[in-house]
Image (cartoon, rainbow, N blue to C red; front, side, top):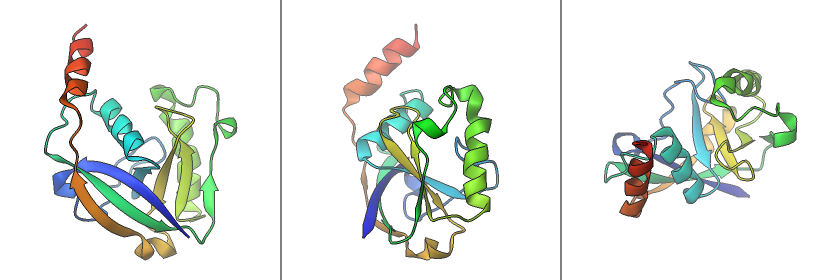
Length: 159
């Protein structure tokens, strides 16, 4: 069985499964992971929040990634986390959870709730896990969102 996940990145990073080691909600600096979403729309929402709604142009691509799921997937749900885990100031709490998973090399995938839509899930891929070589970049396509989205967000970000 395979899991399909999606990632939106700048075009210069779209041809390889590159993990920078920059810190994120579920990893501390130096832990090389890939953040993906269960749906393209969720990947888009996550990126909109990170970019404050601006900057979506032909510089961004959608990566279609296939991950083998015949191994254990570590799953974190809302009930496993503090009530305020979604707050930006609480990255450290989430990083502790993600770093434990990464450092113990528990599984290839960490399935976590999205801070943007906690009923939906993101996947964090451990690039140091033994089966990481089986992760495949299947396709890269252009990201072409409706330009009205950026215009609406620009309007509200000026207030």
